[in-house]
Image (cartoon, rainbow, N blue to C red):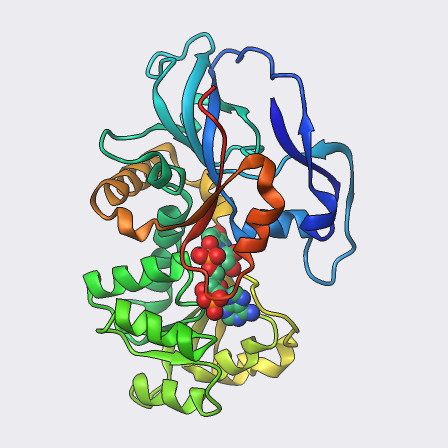
Length: 335
Ligand SMILES: NC(=O)c1ccc[n+]([C@@H]2O[C@H](COP(=O)([O-])OP(=O)(O)OC[C@H]3O[C@@H](n4cnc5c(N)ncnc54)[C@H](OP(=O)(O)O)[C@@H]3O)[C@@H](O)[C@H]2O)c1
């Protein structure tokens, strides 16, 4: 089978390589082997390859394969797997190594794709809806029953647009932040009902304060971090919460500069990496939500472009293109 591997962290263009590996063995009891047809390139996948900013790049004794999400066709099932059968369309998460033609997964992490949901939508069907649910739970925790203004950064990202749609649906006051005037214009057209501000404007903090009514934001949902964190904390009302869930930006902000104690601010992280700590019942509810979203609002799971798995370097170049809309997929043939 074809697979993408890396044995040390570093620039993805330098450390990733296309390899031919023997097909994995037949699935063991309780496992399912999936022929992966499409998988997304997520910022988190590239973060794993490149390592944490400022941290020492790691070397690995055995090659690693990126990717934790994807969709495909069940190739074979192990003993005791009754509810999945060869030929069935499925999505998987969190299953390490989806940047391969074949992946083996525990059956409880394999989700049948509903009829009518396209392969491309199915490839994106789990991570962002689960992330949305995690972010909404974190916002609810931060609000203590009182709905105040929420500001989100990287609002034109795939997940940012899902959050925007949720804000309009549930009626919570959301202010969108993006990094460019063109990005702001595109998002205003998409969500005319939500204020959208570009951090390229010198007076963007004042624009945000006007948009939140001068009282400060109750919550900031942030995927940028770095040197922007200090400005974002300044947007919060006293007692507010900064929820960090991504690291798209550069630079850093010392914790001490945030005036956490005098302003009684909270900073917390949210990671989809914690999803397996949810109970089986909670996970089943999340899966039901994700499959409903894929069936009813596939436009929220937008594909930016598709590339064959072998063309991963071009695909990664596309992921990094400013102004890209949607998620880039890596594809494999059906056999
Ligand atoms: N914690 C979790 O569990 C979790 C789960 C899913 C996603 N995430 C995070 O959510 C973020 C978005 O992911 P995605 O898949 O939705 O991304 P995406 O669709 O690839 O979109 C990336 C967006 O980030 C913007 N951006 C890139 N660099 C930026 C910078 N330095 N400053 C401001 N904006 C910047 C881009 O703006 P332009 O349009 O201007 O290019 C684009 O809108 C990522 O940080 C990702 O790691 C976290």
